[in-house]
Every structure is written in C-alpha cells, then in structure tokens.
Amino acid sequence: MQTRKIALLILQADVFLLSIAGLCSKLAAGKPVFSWSFWCFYGLTLCIMAIYAVIWQQLLKRLPITTAYAGKGMAAIWSIIWGICFFGETISPRLLLSAAVIAAGAGLVISNES
Image 1 (cartoon, one colour):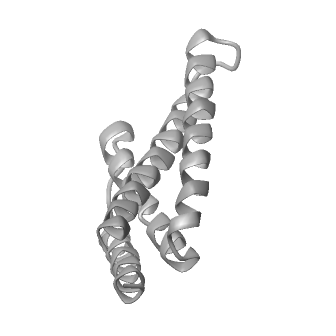
Image 2: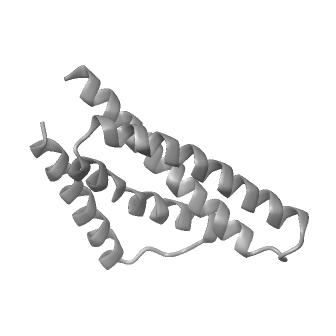
Image 3: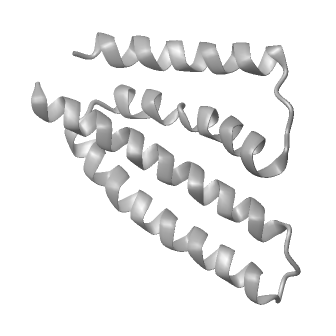
C-alpha cells in the first residue's frame, strides 16, 4: 500500500515535469528560431522530456496502465495554471468545468484501482 502511494506521488511529479516541458516548448516557440533563448528553452524541453520518459517507463512497471494514463490527464490542470501564470490567459467557466471533470475522472480511476 505504501509503495503504491509513493508511485502515485511520483506519477504526479512526472506529470508536473511533462507540463514544464510543454511550458518550455511554448516559451521557445515565442523566440526567434536561431536565438540563444530559443535553443536554451528547446534544450531544456528535450532534457525534461528525457527525464520524464525514464520515470514514465519505471512507473508503468509499478502501476496498472489505466492508473498511469488517468493520472497523466492531470497535465491539463497544470496547463491551465501555466496559461494563467505565464501567458495571461483567461479562464472560462467551461474550462474550469472541464478541468473539474478531468480531475474527478482521474480520481475515480485511481481510487478504483486500489
């Protein structure tokens, strides 16, 4: 039971890493292609994705695939947070409802796997 809880925490940390990679790639897209800042953000994206991939493969050994993929859906929540914090995006009630449905669905799948 304790091992499963640790694996679920690591899953959420890995999803967080995935969202950071998405943030870095969006930041890279806003820079001129051959600029130093573009290559820094792009390189950071590749490094984060490599770390994410290794952790993801290890998690798939320890968790049912349904649990792992349900937890991966939480990246949408992080994307909303990054959109507000870094890009000044506004959040509609429809988007909040969608995020709540995603979180509830992930929670139901994960809790039913125990």
